[in-house]
Length: 253
Ligand code: CIR
Image (cartoon, rainbow, N blue to C red; front, top):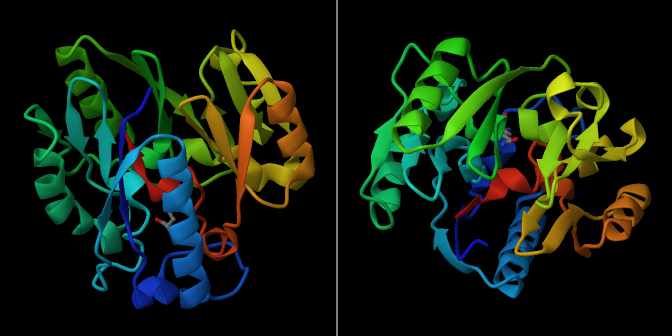
C-alpha cells in the first residue's frame, strides 16, 4: 500500500514541453484543473499528497515520475535522458530528503527516466528506451541490489517509456499493450490486454486497490473493472498532448 505522493503543479511553460504526440498545444487552465482532479483522486485513495509549486524553468517538470525512483528502502535520483529535463533533479533531491536517508543518484554518462521503471514487489523492470540507456539501467540494478531489491532490463522500441505500455496492478495482474503483449518476461503474469486503439489507457496506476485510468477508453475500463478493481476515470487530455500519462504525474510511495 502507498501512503504518500509527490506531485508538481504544471507551469505556464507546459506549452513548451517535449512531445511527439501531434495532438496540439496543451491548454494551461485545463491542465491545471485536470491536475487538481488528479490530486483529489490520489487523496481519495488515501494518499497524503505533497504538492510542489510549478517550476517555469522546466516545461516538463509536472511529470515528476521521471526524476526519481522511490522504493520502500531507498530513493534513487535519476539523470533524465532529455537535456531540457536534467535540472529537474536538483529540487527533487531536496524534497526526497524529507522522506529518505538512503538516497542514491544516477551519474552521467548513464541516463534514466524513471517512467521506464516498473515495480513488481521487490523486482524492478527497467525499459531501455531513448531516455534510459544500458549504463543508467546498470546503475539502477546495482543500487537496488544494495537494498535487497533486484532489477532487469526490458527492450522496447515503439513507445516513449516502459510504463507507456505496461502497468502492474498488483495480484500478478499486468496491463499490457502492443509490443509488451508477447514479451517472454511478462508471460507469467495474468495479462490484461489493452487494444492498440486504446493504447493511451495502458498507462494506468494502481493506488491502494483502486485503479486510475484516463477517461474515454471504454474497453480498457471494462477489462480492468472485470479484473476486480474499482476504477476511477480522469480526464488527461492536456497531458496526453505532451506524451504524459497518469503514472508520470506523481511519485507514489
Ligand atoms: C517528456 O517527453 O519527457 C514529457 N513530455 C513526457 C514525460 C512522460 N513521463 C512518463 O511517461 N513517465
